[in-house]
Amino acid sequence: MTGATGFIGANLLACEKFTGHELICLARPDSENIPVSPHNRVTVRKGPVSASDLAGVDAVIFLAGRAHKMDDRAADPLAENRAVNRDLALFLAAAALEAGVPQFIYLSSVKAFGEAVPRGTIIDENSFSSPSGPYGISKREAEEGLARLYAGRHGAHCVVLRIPMVYGPMNKGNMVSLLKSAARGRRLPLGAAKGKRSLLYVGNLCSAIATVVAHPSAGGIDTYYLTDGVDMTSAELYEGISTAFGQDNGAYYLPEWMLRIVGASGSLCERFFFVNLPLTNGVVSRLFDEFRFSSEKFRRDYGWSPSFTPHEGIRRTVEWYRAIGGRKGNQ
Image (tube, rainbow, N blue to C red):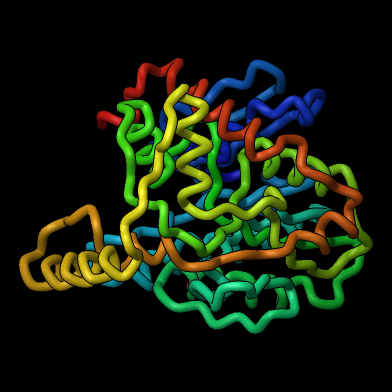
């Protein structure tokens, strides 16, 4: 597997469903702090990888990626995203095919589909994809490259998992901001939020990956959306987090149009004054727009169901945050 030092990789290394397997972490020469698993046998292999290094491997799990950045200051964000999200994945997939590895699992993103859609729309694998932004484009191009590599293959199967926002222990990014606010008893102006969004608890993601590894296919490529199966508004999510912290009334009402005006003003200020503001068009979109996906195809094909409810996932995430004393929130 790649990406062992990341949030999802660390949780996958510790997943009890892989007990009895040897997990080989492919890492850069300068990689540090690869987590040690309490349940599984982990080997670290640093440096370039060739087909000979993958001989005898049952599955390659590609988790590495240049994360979705709302404030990307790279000189060429698309080239930076393509280098990891697309080119590295295709290189490793080609090496896996040469070595005769029966399964390649690529962790993609719902951003490969595109952006928010009209309320009431639930996206599935038959929906037309039109990604925008460097991250989504690079993920979609990787999927297209993998389709070319695995089309018509027998004995080699590629599974692409398009995932929404993932939350859970060792979380980073937007979820930590919500945890930090709830831990401090802050109320947020999310009461007007009506747009539901799909989420995925990291324990459910690890369970799904383990299920794919345990059920190899004859060959070819399949693409799936994967979610908890329970979509929530940002108000419902924050209320759930606040309740887990023992807080009441986490969200209060403020008209959506008012927040959108503030968000538009924030985006203009960022553009002209080169500052980072907490409320922009992008932030308001993530809080209020609809972005829902169906994982019925994956459930049907693999006989899979989530191991954890959103309530359990949020509770476990809050327990982790409390255990680390909220340090992530203060970084």
